[in-house]
Every structure is written in C-alpha cells, then in structure tokens.
Length: 445
Ligand code: SAH
Ligand code: SF4
Ligand code: F3S
Image (cartoon, rainbow, N blue to C red):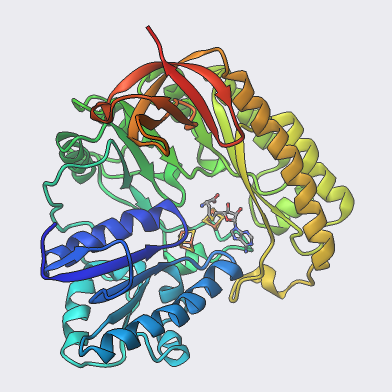
C-alpha cells in the first residue's frame, strides 16, 4: 500500500474486529494512508476496541494514556496525530469517550466503519465532537477490496450482530441485531480472495451458524452448510472454517457437512459457557448441559476426529460450588481440544450485572481449577497427534531461520523446516513433538 500519511491500527477482541480493521485500513488507503506497525510518529492512530469484559474495555484508556505522549511528541515537531476509537467500546460509550479522553478526535461504531474516511477528513479540517455510532442502512461491506496479494489464510465476515441476549453479554448491544450478508457478494469476495492467494477461509459471525443469507438467485435463503458447499467449489480455496457457533443453531445440514465436505476442517468452536442447567437458564442460554452433550455426540458421529473448542464463564452470579462442579463434569465428558475460559465480568446494561456477585477469590479459584482441567485436555489432544502425518497449510516464517509456521486441520500451529517460498502450500508433515500451544513437524516423504 502506498500513501503519504501513515496509519497505525491496534486491534482488540474477536476476529470480527480483525476483519473490520482490515476493511478500515483499506478504506483509509484510498485516502492516502498506508499502514505502519508502530504508533510512534503516525499521522493517525486507530484503536479498534472490545467491550466484552471490563479488562478489555479498560485497556483502551490505558492505551490512550500512552498515545497521548506520542501525540504530544508529534505536535512538538509541528505535526498532528489524529486519534480515532472504533469497535465495541466506541459503540457502547459513544460521546462518553470524548468526555473521558480529550485526546480522541473521532469515535466510530462497528456498523459505521465505512464512514471512517469521511470522519477522518472532517477531523483533519478541525471539526470536533465526531461520533458515529449509527446502524446505517447502507452496506458497510460494499466498498471494493484492493487487489493486493494476500496471506494464505483470511477471515470473511458473513454474519453480524446477535439476537440471543445471553444475560451476561454486551454483543447484542454493541453489534446490534443479527444480520446475514447475502450469498452472492460473499461468493464474490471469496473468489476475489482466492485470486489473491488465499487458500483457507474462516467465515466469521457472532453466531455464524445462524447465517441464513439470501440465495444468489434471490429465491429464499441458504443455510451455512449450503454456503460452505458453494465456497468449496471456488478454485484455490482448499480449507474452510467458521466461528463462532451457538449450540442451538447447529442444524442437521451443518453437522452432515462435517462428514461430507472434505474442505470443511475438523474443528468446531462451540461455546457452552457452563455445565449447570440452573446457571445456563440464568444466563439465558436456552439449552441444557445434556442437550449440548448430545449435540457433541451427533457431531462426533459425523466427524469422529473433530477438535472441539469452547468458551466458559466461571463465577456467574449465584453460581454455587456444586454448580461449578457440573461445569467440570461437562468438560470431562465433552473432551475439548482447546478452550477459552473467563471469570464472569459484570457489563453495564446487561441483566446479569444487576445480580449479586460470587466473591472474587472464589471465582478466581474456580477459574484455576477449570483451566487446569482444560489445559490437561489440550495437552492430551496435542500429544495424540505426535507420530501422525497431517496436512499443514504453511502460512508464514517461524521464529527460527529456515522455519515456517502453518496450521494442522485441527487449527494447531505447526513449526517445521521449510522454504519461505512454500507459503500458501499444503504439505504433508510428520508430527515429531508437541507443546501446549504448538507442534513440531517435519516435511514427510
Ligand atoms: N458469540 C459467541 C461469543 C461471544 S463473546 C458465543 O455466543 O459464544 C466470547 C466469549 O466471551 C463468550 O463466549 C463468553 O464466554 C465470554 N464472555 C462474554 N461476556 C462475558 C462476561 N460478561 N464476562 C466474562 N466472559 C464473557
Ligand atoms: Fe453474546 Fe450470547 Fe450472542 Fe454469543 S450468543 S454473542 S454470548 S449474547
Ligand atoms: Fe469484543 Fe465486540 Fe468482538 S465486544 S469480542 S470486539 S464483538
């Protein structure tokens, strides 16, 4: 990307923010901004923020503190550093952000990100109080994407927002109502990515398996499985993943696709949050622990080797020790390859934030126990791949010279000796070692 001005973007939160940051960088490139990987001296700094837990949201203000010094240094030499806040904190706080930090020139919500170039222009011209947290009718995905060569693995947002309103969660408020992009522009974007070197597509949505986009011929709607089958036909696309899924939207069609579509990778992020039915009900999850376990069984019947991933919240208001142990029991039964677990964090405006909290030390102790169990399951899953031959998509140079890092079908990072020119190729690797977060491989054959 060329341009006379520099833009630094820091991305927090989920993969949807990663995708949005890419789109914002592209929109700003058309304005003459090229990306830089350090904030020092940048003409513009953009924080693409996350509101999911208190810690995530507070990070933004500490980062703004650091940027203040850089902005002052830039001003001291007669320059100007534009500071923008995008993403879910921007959406949740809106004008409040401008009050809390005088440094911020503009605030733009995730659904209005295509308006960033206009906001930046106006801020440069001296306009103040720029906040756009609308949910505009015009399509934030409509802008054409540049034709530059891409890394082998790419994200593609297919669905946004959430109508589930789990009682702990801010997403329905920050991202708005659930919308599915129509199939036709998605297929077009995927084709375009493939032409630019993308081999692996990860379809994104807060509830990606609830995707029901308009069919390309305008006749009715497609399921996610149907979309996956269509994307699998694109020349160059060899691997497809999707994340994040809600248990209640896991339909027969999608389960069957895991057994039938060879390009659909054997990895599924299927958060359950907790193992107690009382807690699940209080969370407004609308499924029981038993229903989740039955679902996992059905998925394994279709794809026995699937790597199961999940999210857990411990210390939800009112969670007892016995209820927490039900979470441990569910984990033992479900057997995860990998998982994320969090201490419950009360979020402003959500129903659960009104409930009496579990004492912090109890919640912390439970989190430790859960993480010990999940860690052991992850280690066992990693270890079980040692000695196997796995196809690895080589993505980028590794830490050591002559090394490349790629991904196994199960989304495990694999380090191996390979030529940098092999990026984008799927090679057969013999797995020779396993650590908690990555595997060591050797080119086979
Ligand atoms: N749409 C996805 C994930 C949303 S956010 C889903 O439904 O699964 C990612 C994860 O953050 C959630 O799965 C949940 O485990 C966690 N999370 C969300 N709100 C939280 C809160 N208030 N406190 C702690 N963890 C939370
Ligand atoms: Fe949040 Fe629940 Fe929606 Fe996931 S399904 S984004 S946890 S409200
Ligand atoms: Fe965070 Fe917003 Fe994603 S709150 S997890 S960045 S949808």
